[in-house]
Length: 461
Figure 1 (cartoon, one colour):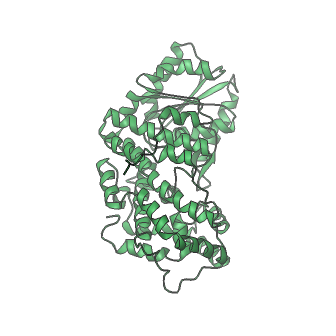
Figure 2 (cartoon, helix red, strand yellow):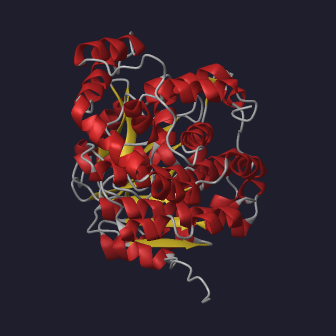
Figure 3 (cartoon, one colour):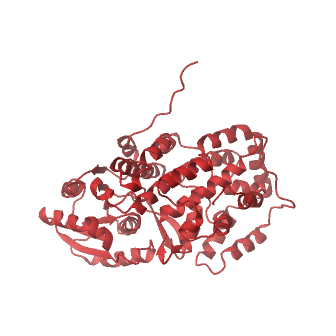
């Protein structure tokens, strides 16, 4: 028998070529020294606006200012958010910047320079886009996958949304600065990278459901799949020591996170990199989840969401004979009953109206739901094999995350186990993006699977 051919793994350079908006990423020691050249090459600028928080300004912003001044580049404005309390990705900060930048001399030829990790970058990304200004990104940690995509994850009227906006035109990522970032930021980035496992299994599920008519369930894009999934297991294994300050691991982690953003640029939405696990995280972000008064990082929320999604997926596909049976007395609710159920789940939330609208928009009628369910039953073995081949078993995932310094118990991020599991109900309501939670809900076994997770000694403990 011939040796099995491994799928091709695309390099960072290969993936950058697929990005439609980002033109260059410099990732090396002393990368900040390249910023004047990048400004001259890619921007016709009258000066720069530096945006950071106090922590990221100390880490890199002061050096950026020194380099720009040394090169004779005017700094038109500096906006330094407080380091404490930790900055939130609230759209109100975007409004603030939008009200100030246009009043500066030289607008619209100023270049916003985002200096920081995920939150600073998302705020600047959105403000720059709405002001029609290309911007430059200076990452200070390998903490999220949000540096390079064309979208920003922001809270708008209490509803966590991915707001469409242009990716950074160029990035200057200094590996020495990134390596000095606090360990919890690197472990957050690792958790965000591990979440791509569920993004992959959910896309397999969505492709099957979409072929039978499910909404927002597209076929897999082979190029995006190759960019993210083909080298994912190896990237996780090589970056597991990032939180311990291992420079090679941190470099691998940042490259891998950057690639996911380039895939989003190519695909033009977050389907390739975000699934059920991010829905858990979005619910907790809308609740402003904090531990001892400190907001839990996006990556650590996603880590627990990835474990919950893995447990759910593992149990859904546990039986080789077919999917779990519907719960006793299960009937699909009418639109009015479903609207009442979702409304009660988000009573008092600023996101209430948006969530109710989304949940009703994605509600399939009984006939279409049965068509999707039958397609899954008819192709059970093939679908199950594909999903389980991509899914990392829960015990292995937990061990890998623990080795990487990530939280593996809900209590570690300020949640009870029961509350973390119950979040699945609200997570299923908030996005029209077909995933394992939608399939299970449509097949009527959603509550039965949650009960199995609750009763198991293996999951989220």
